[in-house]
Image (cartoon, rainbow, N blue to C red; front, top):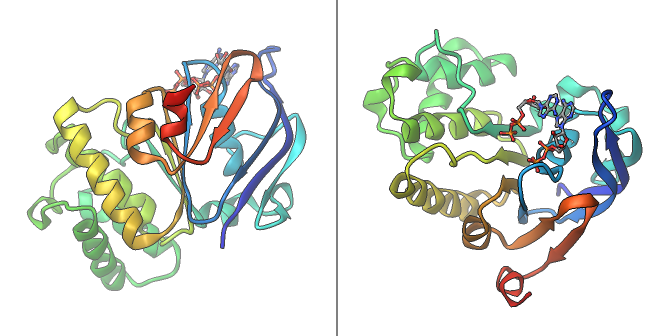
Length: 229
Ligand code: ADP
Ligand code: ADP
C-alpha cells in the first residue's frame, strides 16, 4: 500500500515563479502514473515534492494518509526510489558499488550488499560482465539500467522517474520502456513517471495526469482517453 495524494498544493519558488497552483491529485497504490505535459508546467516540481526535495508553499501531501511533512526526509527517501535523466550515478564507483551502496546504507554487510546488487542488476537486464566497470564505460542505455537498479535496490514501494529515458536514442528507449513494463508487472510498485512525450505516456501509463500551463490538470484512468481529447 502506498497511495499518494496532493491536497491543494501550491509551490512558489523564492524568485516568485509559481510552478504549481492549488493542485489536487491522487496517485493510486500500485499504479503506473505518468505526469505528461509541456516543459515548464510543474511536473518535476510536483514529483520532487513527493520525496521532499522540494517543499510546498501551501497544501499537504499524504503517503498512505500520513502528512509527509511530518516524516524525516531521509527515512522518507528510503521508501522512495528516484531515477533521473542522467542516471545520477557516482562516477568514481564501479557499477556494482553504485548499487551496493544502497543496501549498505540499510545496514547490510558489504558482502550481502554486493550479492543483493547483482540480483537487482539482473532484474533490470544488465549484463553481469559490466558490474565491474565505471559508469563512464557504459552506454547511455546501460547507465539508465544501473540508475533504475540503484533506485530499486532498497526495494522501495514508490519509484519516481523523471524523464529517465529522454537522453537515449529511440531504439534503446523503446527497449527500456519494455523493460519497465516487465518490471512493473513483477514488482507492482507505485510508479510516478514524468515525460513530455505523449506517446511514451500512453505506452507506459495506466493512469495519466496531463499537466498544462497555468496549473491546469486533467486526469485519465485509461491511457486511450487522452487521445480522444
Ligand atoms: P516541468 O517539469 O513541467 O518542465 P518544472 O517543475 O521543472 O516543470 O518547472 C515549473 C516552473 O518552475 C518553470 O517555470 C521553471 O522554470 C520553474 N522552476 C523550476 N525549478 C525552479 C527553481 N529552483 N527556482 C525557480 N524556478 C524554478
Ligand atoms: P528538468 O526539466 O530536466 O528536470 P530543469 O532544467 O528544469 O531540468 O532543471 C534543472 C535544475 O534547475 C533543477 O534543479 C531545477 O530546480 C532548476 N531550475 C529550473 N528552472 C529554474 C529557474 N527558472 N530558476 C532557477 N532554477 C531553476
